[in-house]
Every structure is written in structure tokens, then in C-alpha cells.
Length: 147
Ligand code: ADP
Image (cartoon, rainbow, N blue to C red; front, top):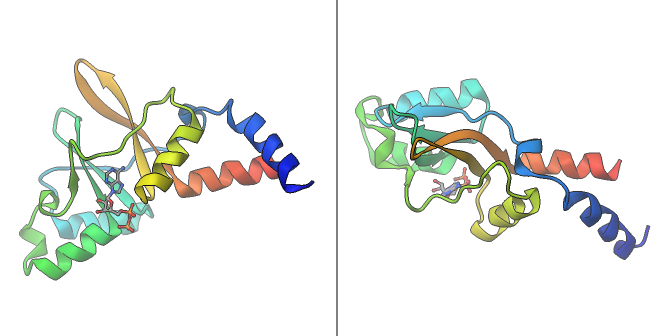
């Protein structure tokens, strides 16, 4: 393949891929979770981003590794400090829908310089988290297309 042909092959296939075809399960915590418990959860679940939800399941925030590092530097008692103090909040959350194209989601990750996007779905006026799109996710698709 020349670079051009490779691009054509990838774009042809990538244009038909939707977020819902490749999304993985979201790992969520509630707003009252402590920074300490969130760190434990991140290790146990082996993810780089946690999504923060209300009891009604609506998406409230995004919590990355760096947010948690910042939390441990800023607070003495992380067992009694809620993740809401360090998470990125609504309405500044970049998200996507199951029917969005994967290409759109990938561009968002690049443009916003973030590692993951929550996939949301509207349910009774509430934006519920139903999945996540990550750089790992997209890299796997890329490998599948190329093989
Ligand atoms: P890390 O902090 O581990 O490098 P990211 O690059 O994903 O991970 O996160 C960088 C910052 O962007 C963090 O403050 C995080 O809360 C925020 N962030 C991550 N994903 C999103 C998103 N989908 N929408 C809004 N902010 C986000």
C-alpha cells in the first residue's frame, strides 16, 4: 500500500463504524465517593477514567488520573473529601451518543486532548452513561482494520 491507498481503505471502513459498535462498559461512581475510594476503584477496574453520576444515574462529571493526583496533592484527608472537588463537571463534559460515528468520537478525543468520552443516552430527560469510548478502544479498531 501507498499512504494514499491505506487512507482510502481505512476511511471506507471507518465511515461505517458507529460509537455503539465499539463502546465498552462505563465504570461509574457516585458524587459522594471519596477521592481515596475513587483511586482504589480505578486500580481495581483497571481504567484511566471514572464517570461520576448522581443517584438518579445522570452524568455529573469525569474523573481522570490527573484529577486524582491533583486531589492527593491538594487535600490532606482524601478519605473524607468527595470527588466532586476535583472532577471535570457538567456542562464542560465532552460526550457522544451511541449513534454518532466513531470518527466523530475519535476527533473529539484529539481536539480536546482527552483519553475518553462517556457515551450517553437520554432517558426520561436524564443523560445516562451507557458506555465509554477510549483511545485503547479506537486503537483496537485500527488494528482490526489493518490486519
Ligand atoms: P489524564 O488526566 O489521566 O491525563 P485525560 O487527558 O483524559 O486524562 O484528562 C485530562 C483532563 O480532562 C482532566 O481534568 C479530566 O477531568 C478532563 N477530561 C477527561 N475526559 C473528559 C471529557 N470527556 N469531558 C470533559 N473533560 C474531560
